[in-house]
Image 1 (tube, rainbow over the protein chains, first blue to last red):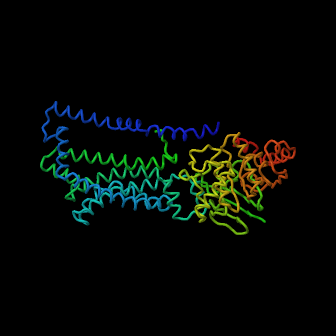
Image 2 (image 1 turned 90 degrees about the vertical axis):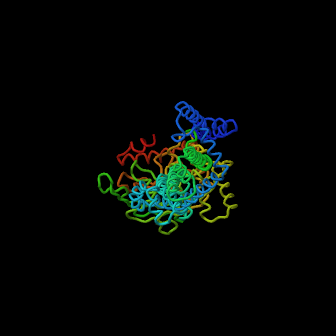
Image 3 (image 1 turned 180 degrees about the horizontal axis):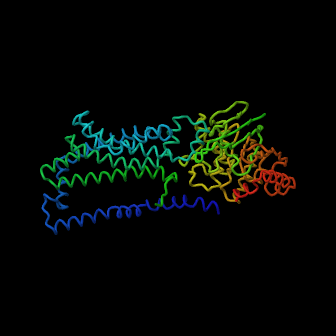
Length: 280
Length: 261
């Protein structure tokens, strides 16, 4: 009786999960994921055709498609994509490496948290884009300035969520670890970090979103390569097809990052450990 | 040898709502001998769990000392293993985490972990995460985790309180069996009189707040014990009735029974 009742959710979760990830389930989920985008393209094509909107105002779907093909053929696409991905990657790694230890330290110490929380709240509104003038002043119109903006945009969201994550770890878990003689380093890696992970993943999602926006803005202002720069350049010469193409690529990259990096991370950790409901 | 020595323990705190100073624990003194099973009972709100938390080093006392193996302790440490009421297992851990803390090599760690899983009846479950286990199994795992670390004293904080009655009986019997086999030193917090008598060698009965030791009752029942046989003994009833009377003299007869329900 008890066994069935208490183990129920976990077991159900485990049997349901592989079914939805089988080849058929994967196809179905891809279909439902892509459907809204397909509809958007259809509506777009129909509306532009029906209203006869000129290309300079808004391009047709096919124009954007050929713009992407042209960007690919000329090598511009890869160049911009490479520059942007490298900057996001480096900025995100720096943000994770700095914000996680800081946020977890804050979460573990009520005094530190009380001291820094007002500053963190203050900084959230300024994170990222508002720093572009200062970043270009310090670092010039360079890669470093853009990376700084990505790092800055992500840092506060990540720190704040890591702090919350640690504060949400049940006190008994911390006590259990302490009564086993757990040292500081082990406490960080084996108790605080995994315990805070559900919240940290949320922080990564939000933070990466901020990071991408910061990237695009910084590339428009402070760079001569990257998707943001391509967007800016195309706008200057009224190439709306390239503008929309760049926007579409940025959005797709973000979706890919979420599906290929964040979701698998979540599946292997917090879902596997039963810290997040699989049926949600 | 005395494994655990509690003398003159007192705890005062300031109520954060009213601002009043409250004396939770008046003066508590008792000892637990090596290989002895001692339970602590008292009216609800008398601070039994606070006594355990002070021994574990989670909460600081206002006065008094806690000695483990003759040494005064301050703060948590691996000499005192704790089994928590809501098991406190790490959702992300399958193997015996505490053993690694002691610097035991991996192969031996695994051996010890498997041996203790078998001891508590969880052989074959070594690769499960806690959320894949039932409530009773989780608490068994909590016991195994502490036993595997071989602490000087095992502290148990109402470990079976949130488990259904049938499973609880089984867990109590299995705990007795493990205790009789291994003879660890156990300090056990409970509000269930029958549970305390069934498991213990001695029962510390506390008064109402500010709590003091009313009496330390010796449970001279033969071991090995099993639920049916032991509770049917006239001595068992006698001791249980005596403790019930002690608690009701405290003026809070309903307390422990209400929380037990």
